[in-house]
Length: 96
Image (cartoon, rainbow, N blue to C red):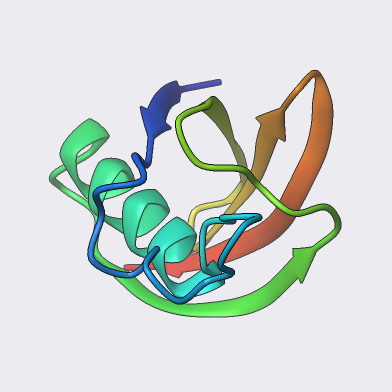
C-alpha cells in the first residue's frame, strides 16, 4: 500500500473563512491533495473520478494527515486519511 502525508497550514488561502476560531481543512483541499499526490506516486495512472468520498471527522489545520492507498482493481483505488489516529476521510479513485 502506498502512502503520503500532508499538512495544511493556517496560512492556506482557503482557511481564512473556514471556520473562524476553529479552522478546519475544507474537503476540496483534502481531495486536491489526495489526487495530486496519487498522481505523483504513480504517474502512469490518471484519476478520472471519485465515485465515493465520505468525510467522517473534520481535519484541523497545522496537523499531519496520513493518506493510505490500496488497489481494489486495475481501475479502482481506495484511500483513507488518518488524522489524530482516526480515519477522517474514506473514498475511492477511479483511474485509467
